[in-house]
Image (cartoon, rainbow, N blue to C red; front, top):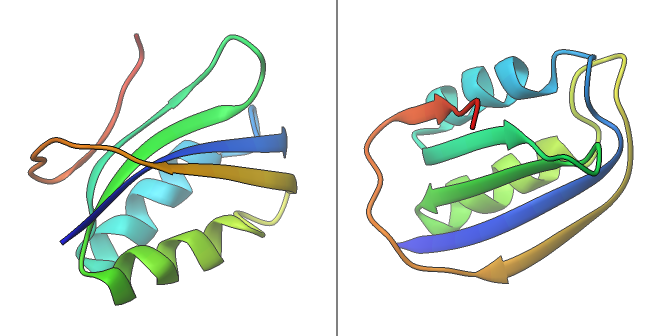
Length: 89
């Protein structure tokens, strides 16, 4: 089980990134959450098999069609997640 905290920078708010990531995470069987951050980045915690998490990160490098991802910061984190949620806090 792999659990990572992601910070996705670029044109990622207002382009459907969170909903698209939720759909892709569910398709891959990845649990966790995603939310908009105050600095206009998108923050996520993703958990699943190494292959599934890596596939979601690969997807996140391009995101939905209107997104323009500049970079993704990642770090290991802990927790146990069920399902994939969009957070609004």
